[in-house]
Image (cartoon, rainbow, N blue to C red):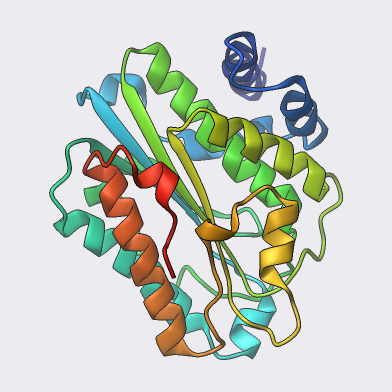
Length: 263
């Protein structure tokens, strides 16, 4: 049996265990299966359980848009700086739980599989060149599947887990071939029902897209949606707002999941 087969079986087992425990519905299982995400999830899992010594872990996950429209609108630097600011702000915060960071671009490139915050890779001109499409639904399924699988793996090892995930796009879906909004909504709904997950989104204005409607169709509550205008200062400010929420979660704020961005 190849390593890929072993990895696929591991992911399948983690998701099946979540389903058996009632944290992942049949609809979500079907969505993740339809999206055929096993190997893509494996690419993001990162550190092994043996490398985690904390009794509490916070998974901070970001999916920056690397579509060509980011570059076309002149927002490459702002997205890169915003992502890096979140890592820096979390690094400066006093955490009650260990933060594991994971960054996967919207078109599937894994910049950092889950790793300790100190080892998280910053976005640079060399590793971030937005020039692709916007497979928003397909890749949101992958990134959320990764969050669920990692959380399940940690929980099975007796480690308390909280998660906060940010999906970033400057347009509606363009290029998804497997998943639809209803598939993502099923997954998000299951995650939010557990009350230890935050799924947030940032829609950078393209002048036409109703991002609240897009993300609502994916099950993401309006209170966890940021809609900055198409300017570097607004984009950086939106990342700063997200970093504050992520820091609250990392500091053990029990009510953080219920709150929202409040803007």
